Image 1 (cartoon, rainbow, N blue to C red):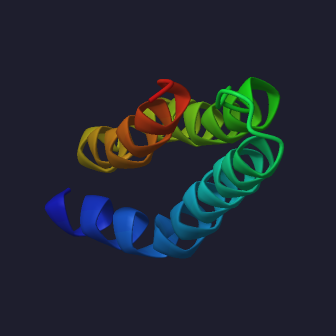
Image 2 (image 1 turned 135 degrees about the vertical axis):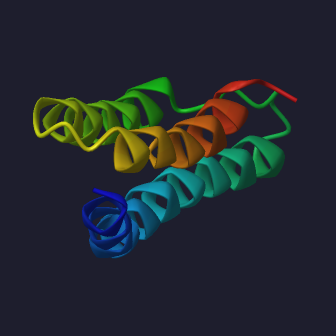
Length: 88
């Protein structure tokens, strides 16, 4: 079972990278726009929430397939996206 978890986690790395990169991109552009207009930064909750929903859907599918290790690995992108949701 350890091999299946490792294969699933490695196969999901590109998807996780794209989802987190989208979140960083959306937060970066929002931060840049807030800085340009001299307004306080407000995180783009719709975009970050969508990215979290994609990761959560993948996690639910992994849990349904009983790949507990790969589902636990999905917490890494969730934590990265949640860090972007906190206003600084």
